[in-house]
Image: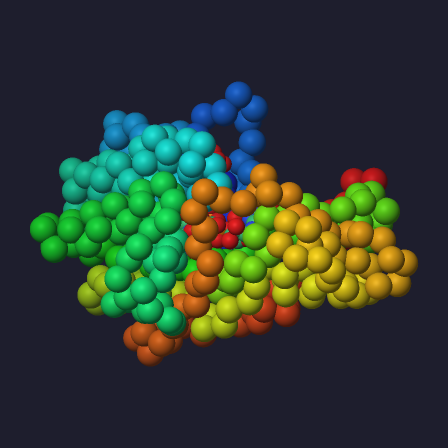
Length: 338
Ligand code: NAP
Ligand code: F7E
């Protein structure tokens, strides 16, 4: 039985990856932070199936301990302060967890079990102010947030440990991926949650920042499969995982409202732009400049060519299906609660 250690198991990707590995017959260990309220977030349903180990990416002793207990053959580093907006408010914590934390974990592996295979959750945010369209493994990086900068360190230290110590360490440069388990502060989930509430008469308006931003959005379930595929290769390497399609935040809003039968008409420009429900003339979307970022990533579009060719990775969920699933899920959750 293969053993895997997942950091960030309580998050969106961690929980889907744990399900995938359990299905494949792995013994799964998950690193969790001690909290004042015992809660396993998205991994609540995995209690009893996964062995949880207390630890923190900023505490190298706890990572050495996690490696000792798990003796993992595969280590997936998904733990991060992952919200870009917060990285301006907590730049040091973001760097400790997302940058130095990666070295802490690589060292724990090197000390306890250097033969373990390692996956690093790198990100399209490293491309930031994009130098090429579409972005590939060879595209130069230009991060635009403390999060992107910290992740770039994590990316390079992974490559460095691969080259310095011959470790099987791979990075997945994953573009945005969302799901029914996405954190509520990320724009997709914020939209689908608000659309569900507005359609049920529980909220008046959805307030957003930059609706012109373009993202390459896929479903998290498809993306965790790519992580696993990377660690099954004979040689470690870096791969872009993306859909090859890009859409604006505005398009996401329109399609999400369409799922509840509301057609949006846009009026005004920039900070004065509003989205009106065509049926009753009510304003359901407006701009709140508080959601603008100090530096924006305007466009992300990835090329999944290498992942498709070398890993045989195939995406199952389309952009429209993703929105459908997320709106349906939020409607169900809200109906259950009220
Ligand atoms: P997420 O839902 O925010 O989950 C982050 C996880 O990291 C949570 O389990 C969190 O635990 C844990 N964590 C945070 N700080 C920690 C610390 N100091 N020590 C140990 N664990 C800590 O993120 P996600 O969307 O699943 O993303 C997974 C990874 O992929 C992240 O590294 C993210 O940066 C990266 N990534 C995400 C995307 C995307 O579009 N989703 C794209 C590219 C890369 P708590 O529950 O205790 O907070
Ligand atoms: O923003 C714009 C915002 O916060 C997407 C993380 O998983 O993917 C994620 O980072 C876009 C940005 O995700 C609002 O300005 C407009 O342009 O959903 P997001 P992100 O910043 O792309 C990457 C790949 C990661 O690695 C990260 O971990 O939407 N936007 N209005 C808004 N964004 C938010 N959150 N809230 C708004 O009201």
